[in-house]
Length: 131
Image 1 (cartoon, helix red, strand yellow):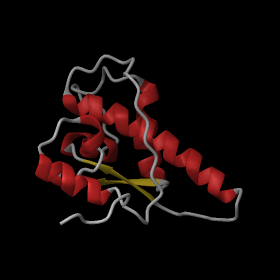
Image 2: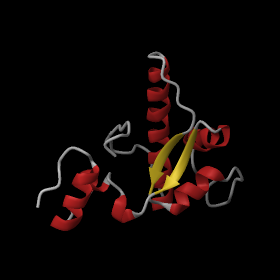
Image 3: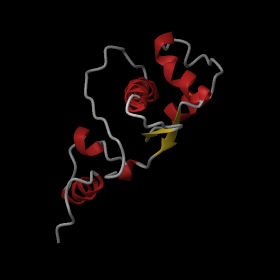
Image 4: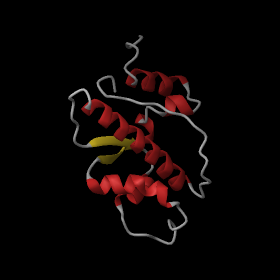
């Protein structure tokens, strides 16, 4: 992760999610908004990016972002949250699966034991290996 452009944002969701898939879908949608803003900011400096990968550890949210068909289980999700799906279809971003063990965001959101904490801390690229 040390070579990647990273943004971190924390906010209590205002939308009521019925499932973890929906909650992750809304969160990844917020990450999409942030990534597209950073992409535009970089254009102002002459740096152009094509496809921006966003990492997600929820298969249901990934599938929902790639499937344009409205299902009975997703019809209650507000239209504004489908911004993510629209940008995946346009090719502005891609959603990639990251395993829960390698999800660096977990260091900021979950209590972890020493081993996983140290592993994810190295992934942040902010510290060297301590033996």
